[in-house]
Structures are given as C-alpha cells and as structure tokens.
Image: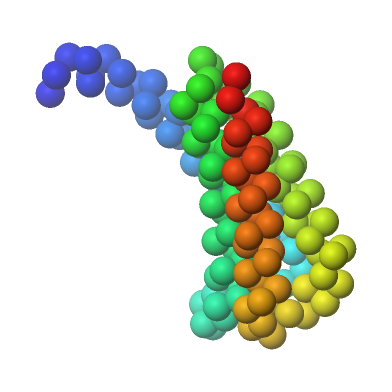
Length: 134
C-alpha cells in the first residue's frame, strides 16, 4: 500500500466515522419526528415509506458529503452536519404543513405525496449542500 494512503487513512476513518454518526443521529431524530413508523412500513412492503425515507436520507447525506469535501476539521463537519440536520427536519415539517394528510398518506402507501416529500428533501439538501461551499 502506498505511503500516502497509509498517512491519510486516519483522516478518512475519522471523517467517515463522524459522517456515519451524523447520519445515524439524523435517522434517529427523523424517525421520531414522523408520526408513522417508516422502518415497520418498509418491512411490510410500503413503497411510499421507502421513497420518503430514502429522499430524506439522501437530502441529508448531500450536504454532509459536501462539507467533508470542503472542511478542514471534524468540528466543521459536526457543526455543518448539525445545521443540515435541522434544515432537513424543517423541510419535513414544512411539507407536512403543505400536505395536511401526509401522516395518513405515507402509511396508506400513497406514492404521490411520498414522492413530493422525497423531492422536497432532495431539493433542500442540494441547495443546503451548495450553500455549504466555503
């Protein structure tokens, strides 16, 4: 293994580890903010739940990935990751206000509102990631 790879491996592992912790934290909070149980719905074959949760995860992962590419420290990553987390939760809450039946639609397997929620999450995540280029 080249020496350069060995010398940068600790940084890779540190950033990867913090990113995984941020992703797990986001998932934990998101799953507790939504009134339905996405994991159980997904296990039961509910495509709407899978679509909406996938959009939320990707919408959060995009700014985290961008911060990893541009940050100098793990503190930067954690700080901007926390901001991305809050923004994604706010995006969900705004979509829930715009679609008052979302709490019933996802468990009922309705794809249209789930797709809109996923696209809102992805759009906000993309804008969020672009704003985090410094």
